[in-house]
Image (cartoon, rainbow, N blue to C red; front, side, top):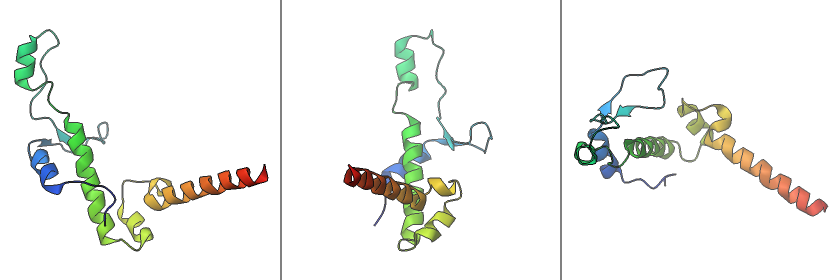
Length: 118
């Protein structure tokens, strides 16, 4: 059982095409870079197409790769959500899955209470 529906083979194949980046505090959300740099804005359209400027975004594959990592951690810790939260180092406690579930439950209970009080 996993959280996201991700095809691991396809994602890993596409990620291998990208160039890994070292950590940068100003670009912390990026882990990979496109292998080819985009051309200048005044370049001919045909040259831009041949260079790959209009290819599918590499940010999509980075997001899918992150979903793949989350699935692996989730599969390791399935029944215990607190263990899952501890293994997610890049999320604040209120942003992790357990926190999101609690927020949703509070909203649902609030709307039920509001609906019943009217």
